[in-house]
Amino acid sequence: MTPRAIAALKGADVIAAEDTRVTGQLLKHFNISTPMVSLREHNEHSMAEKLVARMLAGETIAQVSDAGTPAVSDPGALLAAAAHAAGCRIIPVPGASALTTALSASGFNCPHALFYGFLPPKTKQRCDALTELKEQNFISVFYEAPHRIVDCLNDMASVFGPDREAVLCREITKTFETIRRLPLGELAAWVASDSNQERGESVVVVNAAPRAEKADGADYDSVLLPLIAELPLKQAVALAVSITGAPKNALYERALTLKKEA
Image (cartoon, rainbow, N blue to C red; front, side, top):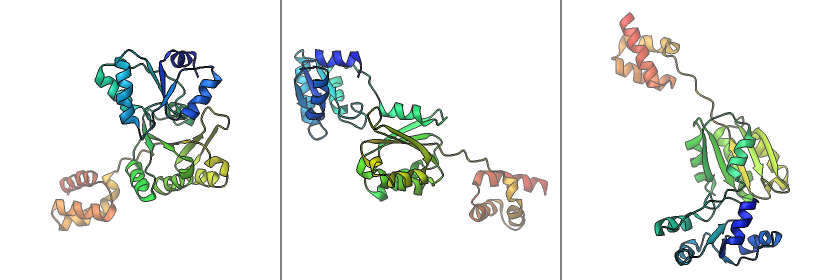
């Protein structure tokens, strides 16, 4: 909690909180008496209209979410969009961010990262989403709920492979903060063996896929040579791709070279 955030909450006319009970504890700790209203996933659309009307009347609204940055896999985006549309001034007050904190602690040396947020809750849809990311050469960052973390890690190990390095960051900045880096297979087993790791919100950072070595068409001469001797070039290459699984472009370039050398 920063001095700027404390000042913002004290200076607001009203605080829009994801859960007024949770935010109430924070306000009590810092002796903040600003009144609150509830702004959560299920009422954000209607509340956004009411809060924007208050802003247009000259009031200052502060918006907070329970365990993360507002509008980042948390309520707040609809309110911000409505405020933009109404021409209201929006002032972000940065605080602890699970995304950047987890990335900085991961130790993965890749300049690119994808923030996915929460994966689908059901196994098939979750695995489908992970499959699309399997070969990508960037770090992937996911948020996950306590009751799904074991299933999520098991699916990651299944799709990405048990040897892909990952970091589990649990309860970041809180009393029971845990940061553990292991291959996905070992990480899934470690969490499953300790029920304490299923408590609280988690961030999972998965390392980028290793770069595939560029295929050399010459590696497949034993397949290409007899095929191009008997078949048209395109047909020979298509059959070679089917047999070897090698990239079509690499095989086609090699077949052209072999034709010229023949």
